[in-house]
Image 1 (cartoon, one colour):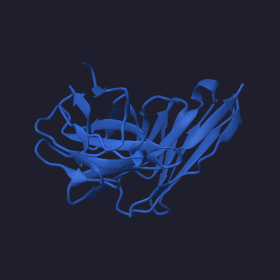
Image 2: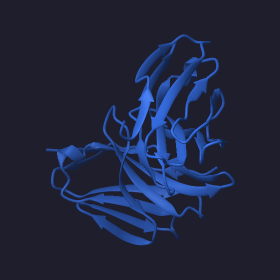
Image 3: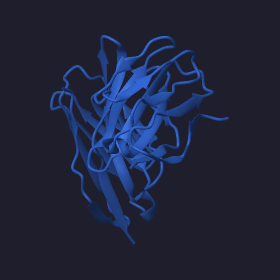
Image 4: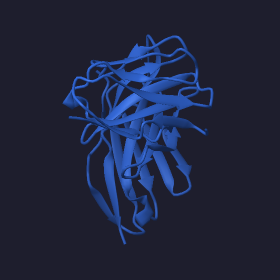
Length: 111
Length: 113
């Protein structure tokens, strides 16, 4: 692994189902972020973690939860998916305040 | 509410011309500013960062920052068709939980051969 890996790359999900988007980095960056990107709205922060063991809410946290048990992993969980959560999700990491690295994205469609 | 604004475009320029992309932000205490390039269907990639007022040049790219006017711009000289992408402006700010970033909606640039 080099950089940030997200899984799955795409998913079609039935409304009401629970889903976890996975994100793993191998750069030992302290801070990690989850964004969603929607046409015309740009990247919006869902949740973030500045170090292992801590998390915070971003601009659009409702319907999502995260955990940061260790430095490398930062999963995003949708407890009960709704169609408005259809989006492209990006995980990112930074070291020293520079958001330099993004994962390849997960395209999620909730039907 | 911290906001970052950009013209959505599309901005069309002929090959070889200078492309000028603009960004304004609402939070006066922001100290770090970034430009990302995103090709269609791909993830954003960092191309420039700027922290002090004035200009910063890197190859064909120049970032300009004016904190008093809360304005950041990106100039692309000798534009190439391969520069056609969406350019995202990002602003860093510090809150009770640490450092975070707010992105603008992006400006779509089209460089015409």
